[in-house]
Length: 205
Image (cartoon, rainbow, N blue to C red; front, top):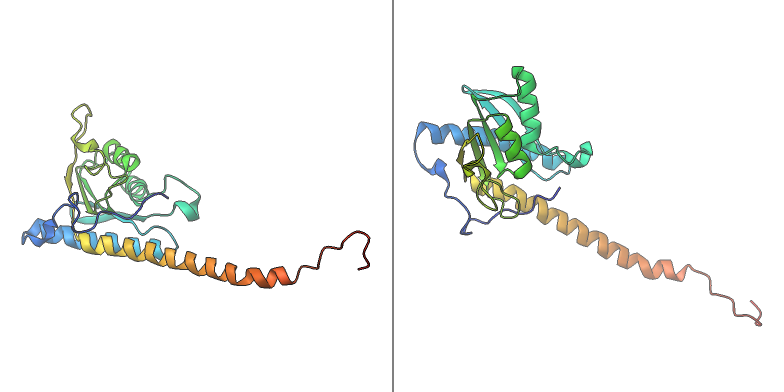
């Protein structure tokens, strides 16, 4: 899955954290993003890029989801897609106009399209994604006037935690790759010494 490291806290594209405001909505956003972070941690334990999502309807958790394209052999199995599918099944309708979606990483174009088809009324994300983000980082589909649905979008909620779990995942993955390369290099001379010499024609073995 190509969901790389998001913008750092000092990036010009990183939105301010709205949960720093003391309002009931900001408090609820922080709480629900915490549930999405739990899903991101579940993805990480399964070796998936740690992105989690939660669908809320009238203050209640309707569905959750996390990244699982690797384990599920499914390129569409982003956290948002998993949560939207589960919410549609739970509510018996693919349209979710009274629902809000919380996700730890800015949705990509695929997920933004699904969010619009579902008629989600509000999208809240944590970390900005400067490579695939469709809420303003690369493109802003939700602000496209030619489209027939426009969700409210809030970014930067619990951003530091959402960025941190991604940084940890990619750092550990790079460290594991280095360890494998070093181990392979260390084994190479031993493997070469086990190969019998090539016989020279005309000379006794």
